Amino acid sequence: MKFMGFSGDVGEYSCDLLAFVVRGDEEWSTVLKNVDEALGGLLSTIAEEEKFEGKADTSLVLHTHGKIAAARVALLGASEDVAVPAFRNYAAQAVKIAQKLSLDSVGLVAPSAGSDTVDLSIRFVAEGAILGGYRFDRHRTQDTTEWSLGSFGLGLMSDGGMLDISTDQFNTATGIGIQVAEGISLARDLVNEGPNKMTPIELADAAAKIAEEEGLECTIMGMKEIKAMNMELIQAVNAGSDIEPRLIHLTYKPEGDTDGLPVIAFVGKGLTFDAGGYNLKPTGAIDDMKIDMAGSAAVLGAMKAIKALAPRAIVHGIVPSTENLVNGSAYKLGDVYTAQNGKTVEIRNTDAEGRLILADALCYTVDLGIDEMFSLATLTGACVVALGPYTCGIFGTDQTMVDQVLEIGEDTGEDMWQLPMNPKLRKMLKSQVADMKNVGERWGGASTAALFLKEFVGDTKWVHMDLAGPSFLDSPVEAHMGKGGSGYGVLTLLEYANRR
Image 1 (cartoon, rainbow, N blue to C red):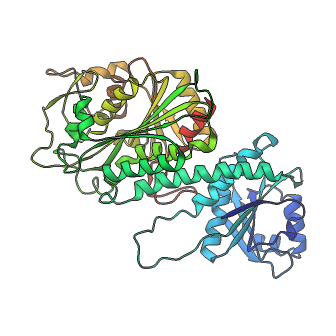
Image 2: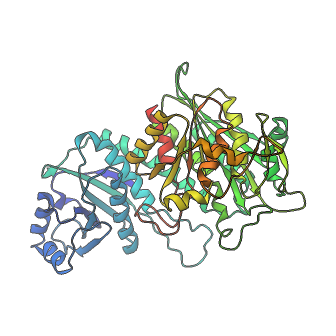
Image 3: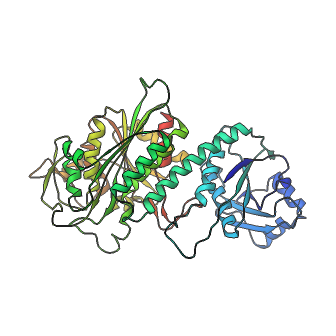
């Protein structure tokens, strides 16, 4: 897809579809009024007849019959507030209309969110244009359509006119947006892929490919190395699978002198299929358990795109990966295992396996001497019960870091909410035979899971993202999302590294 900026008389911009963002009942912009006048008032007349009120996620399309250069005009309803993350949705709405009509070129005219947000607006439009056309249909042989958008143009309005955007500014912003969207698309692909085709081995292969393409350092560790590092928790979860586990380690280092730069780590849970072990998941709960590696997908998606933002920080992407299945060797309730840091864990639920493999991976990460780290996981259904399917639960040991993450979530459009790690709940993890159990009681399940992980981060500043809800969507509510893997977390990780 080719991206381009335009200004001046939008009536002279030639494309298959020229889309305008319209907010609620707000008076039409001078630019849109001029187009309506060129169309002989047809646009406003049909909008009134069709009762188009500019509500969010509504649209109206009509042919221009050669009265302006564009073949069709579309009105895209938008929320009252102009927030920069919404630009993804504007672009995705326009792309979805083009996809439905099999069009080749789109132009989008959107209100500026302010002179200081032009670069982000352009970048988010590029992201939305790509993500709005995302499909995972590589395994389908029937009812598929070969369609791709040829070009996408963007014009930003300001004070009744069109902004002049330099070619360099536009190309730089869209270049970043394209690579970020590719990172998100990669994360979606990894989550959407079938578990027979996305095992720990294939996930490690995907990571190695990212490293080769992006010039990252890469270390892939198998069972031999995992045993040598005394990671009994990863081994325990893996015991029921015929496929060996992998510990993936990617490293990004910026160009030039790296002395004194902050060192950040992203640690993502990579359960490529979770049957629950001997606490076998029932039908309905097991169906989509290929998604239990969404945390690792977010980490790998972020590492795919990190050079586009070129943060002045050293960034590690670490993924422990295995399956959690059942055979005669599978780990059992009552078993006791030792984590890499020497703490012992009694298994009281084999379906609470994500925190186990993360625990060993967090110990490994702490030993790298990093300054700050994240853990990302589809960890608990309790978090979805608490926050619903669109919001990520945030926990952390450093409130300043947590506040930064929450602010970034607001700025990038990734919904999140801080949940407590009440120390009173820690007693739920007490064991009679080991240092701790791997589960607490029924209540506060997301918090007790976070408290368990906290035992393995030492004094390192740490934020945990429980993305069990927003990582996989059954009913998307935004145009740049689709049913299935969302790529949630990629934007937050990238922006955090960028701001550091």
